[in-house]
Amino acid sequence: MCQWRPTTSAGASPFECQRATWYRGLMLLAIMLLHALPMAAQRLPQGYFISPLEGEIGLSATFAEFRTNHFHAGIDIRTGGDIGKPVRAVADGYVARVSLSPWGGGKILYIKHPNGYTSVYMHLNSYAGKIGQAVAAEQRTQQRYAISRIFAPGALPVRQGEVVAYSGNTGSSGGPHLHFELRRGGDTDLYTHATTINPLLFGIPYRDSQKPTIRGLRLYPIGGRAIDVGKATTVSIDRPFYLGIYATDAAEGSTPHNGIDRVEVYLDGTLCFRYTTEAFPLDSSRMVNAIIDYRHFLSTRQAYLLTRQLPGARGPWVPLCIGDGVFRLKPGSTHSIGVKVMDVMDNTAERVITVKVSAAASTATPSAQPSDTAGLHPAAYDHPFQLARTHFRIHLPAFTLYADDHLRIEESQVAPYLSPVVSITPTTHDLPPNTAYTLYLKPTVPSHLPPEKLTVVRISGKRLAAYTTSYAAGWYSAPLRDFGQFALLADTIAPAVRPLNFSPAKPLRTTTLKVRLSDNLSGLDTYRFYLNGQWLLAEYDGKTATATLDCRGRLKAGHNRLTADITDACGNTTHREWLLTR
Image 1: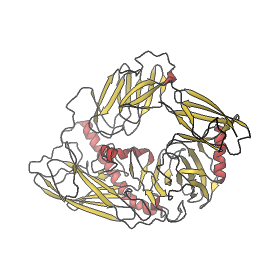
Image 2: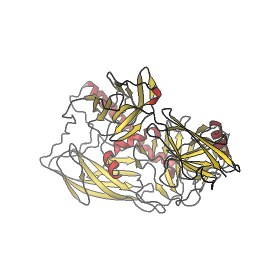
Image 3: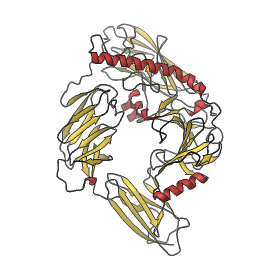
């Protein structure tokens, strides 16, 4: 017999019983939402939106694919490796926001529509017509490449089918494509409290007659090592376990190994687990880490969806089942476990395995209490956690963790760090935090540097990553989205700027200049270029650390003076000048 039940047991404390009541109520709501999703999809406006690109679309990534620290929030439409494909407004509306960054979505366009939805277009190469003119004017006003601008309703109206931009490869894109989303709700930034919905559910033409592929199954014995099922049809087990499913999808005109849409697991023919990804709240995207085998994904890029349920990772966008998703099977019994994987067009792949349970197996869940208790601090996932010491303080908001855990917190003094090196590690669930938490550090090593020269860093072997750092009353603080080792470090080295395709010793042969920008620690903050005293747009690509300067119509015959002012996040500044001849 399989028991899908919460981990609370008879004789639990009043606090645990209260949590169990909350747990059951949330599960009921989640199951109701799950069953409502297909009906909601049927009520989505069909035919209201057209495709953002001409012709039949193919995908290089599907909706809600598993990524590190997030679900993929839209679909990636292939552009044949080309940059500059015309991007169309999918319906009438107005430009609500533009955002340009060297990272993330690169050049982004947000269009609000009368029916309450917002269409989002990312990794653009450029904006078209009046939109491009408005962006250029804002960049000149701020004298920055990276900007974010909210537009008033009606300021930039667009019509369905109007070319509003051109596809590209900007931001953190891995190759030319168009990332496209349809969102509902959201605050002024159109992100916070917004829900993203699979665009293919709105009837945008898409051809897919190929079924998904189940590439792997794993059994995860509680307290033991994962078992790769491989091609076996029968697996033996001697303790409670949960299941992992790795599957991908393909379609005509699309790349293989894309994400799937739905998963169902059957125990002896009875449905006991269902996963669906038709929509999810954007600000809950990090919960992806709790529903896959996170460490295996980091090392192999194979995303095994887990039936295990952690209480801090619940909702209609994550796996839903009865209980905690752990199979507790009767010793000596034999069972059939069936897996169905479906794509958005209902193409289905199936696999069945037989699980034999040892006669000596136990149905009890092993204790997760670490044997080494030095430096351990219990932390409840649904309550804030705080710890204060002489030279560091830690504050985790409620729901930073996905389940109750023990945090191992240790400090040591190591050169050249100006504070203790503080190590923060969960001992039961090796997952990054769901929400940001705050670390406060006070220097233990005297420093005559001004506060802005110190930054909180994460230490990973010889690699350092700096965080945005604030200072108040002797304490330095940073919002962290990782666990690990952290300390204070001084940054007194200015950024570097190096010409790539020009030299003062040679006449200019191009009107498009390129320079390499780099910083040793805290990262670039501002970069401004001037040609003959006039501000010059520098389009910075974070992937290549290259700034492109378009000097067309700006260069004069004879000598031209190009200047650069580059500042990092700790206020270190580099000023460079080049005298160029044309």
